[in-house]
Length: 206
Image (cartoon, rainbow, N blue to C red; front, top):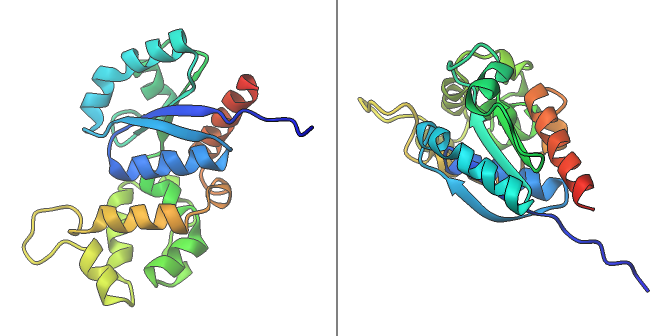
C-alpha cells in the first residue's frame, strides 16, 4: 500500500499582489499549497497585523509565511525583523526581501532576460546590492526589444507613477510561468534563507 504523505497547507501575508504571486510560487516550490493570502494593503498595514498572524500561527500550528521588503527602513534584515517581531512563533516564517522583492526576480538572470527581451548582461549579478530595485526593473523594461513590454513596464509621458500601467501584471506573469526560485536563490541570500525556512516548516509538519 502506497504511503500517503500529507501536503503542508500554508497561510501567507504580503504587501501587494506581486508579493502574493511570489509567496505562492515559493510555497509550491517546497511542496506545499497556499490556503489564503492576507494583507495586500501595503507595508504599514502588514506591520499592524503581523502580531495577529503570529498569534494565529502559534495557536493553530498552521504554517505561515509573512514577506515584507526591507526598503530603506533598516540597515539590514535582522534589524527590521527585531523591530517588527521579537518572538516569532515556531510555525511562522517572517522573511524580508533585500531590498525589494524585485531583487529575487532579477536573481534568475537568464529567465528574466528572456522574458523581458533584454541582454543578460543588462541584469545586475548582485541584485541585493541595488539601492532601488523597482527602478532598476523599470529600466530593464525600458531597454526591452519588445514594444509591449516597454509600454507595460515604463511610466507614460509625464506620469508621476513610479512604474508602468501593467508593471505588476508583467511581473506576476513572469513569476507564475518563468521564474525559478532554486536558480534565483544562488544570487540572493535573503531568498535562499526564505526557502530554507519554508523547508524547515515542511519537515516539522511531517
